[in-house]
Length: 379
Image (cartoon, rainbow, N blue to C red; front, side, top):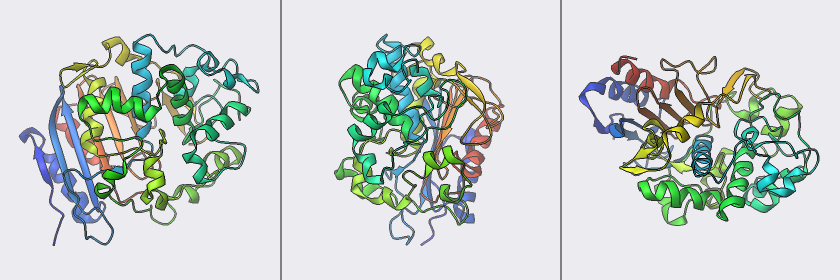
């Protein structure tokens, strides 16, 4: 049974997006995937298709969800932006104002904004940890609070691949008394009825697509890494098979463990694309949304070994990803998932898939649909 045609809805204006989506399926670039776009808060593209498993026994359905790795980070950023907009979090304040233990080992002056922009010098753990330790919130946050920075905070970015979610998440927990996953569910996903989870209940496991590791040479473990890179990516190493386990899915890993689909990703970020309002509900002020656009740091990232430009959490247009409109936010996940928020066009583009490609920040498959969208929008 062929599954290389798209199911779902496309507004006539964006018919080329369906063609791009089906090209990925027919070529084998994608096994199973979803793509969704919103414009002015309305869903204008909502596509899915292919298979949820490598053996091709489970079709990718409308409600199929998948681990999206670092696209999860954007949900964490949104939670922090909401707290800042309410006046409960000051990005310019020292982290230690909210988390006193964090001041240890020369970290008293590290700001919350440094956590958001990957410039806190805490991209990994100095002490050897295991994947199982990632499921122990208190252990990994206590270790981060105690250790010295890996470089001078605020001077350079160095992608905090896994640690960022724990760092920002612990600040959220200290302020609200709720875990990041709980705050996100109650304040964002729940009110929007959005199918994205940071800490997936076992009742939803049957809907999760199996992630298929990147091709040989394309995995994080195949990268040439310096000392900081090894601390960041190899302690613990990234094991894609872990995402199929209940322990991973159920844990709150706010930088890499989120489970959702393109529809939930695009709908949630419509909050930022539409001045703080989604589904008729206000989550943020207009100014609170635009806070994400404020440049925090730019230059060669110590981990990526390439130019990066970070706003308040999100990536900003620049050498890493050029965009037609300047007021654009983005981030992607290991293997290919992607979110782009174009504030000028009041659009969001979300992509989630199960066949992982090379690289840590999206790839050509998702961008094929995004470019078709921008072209149709005249951007």
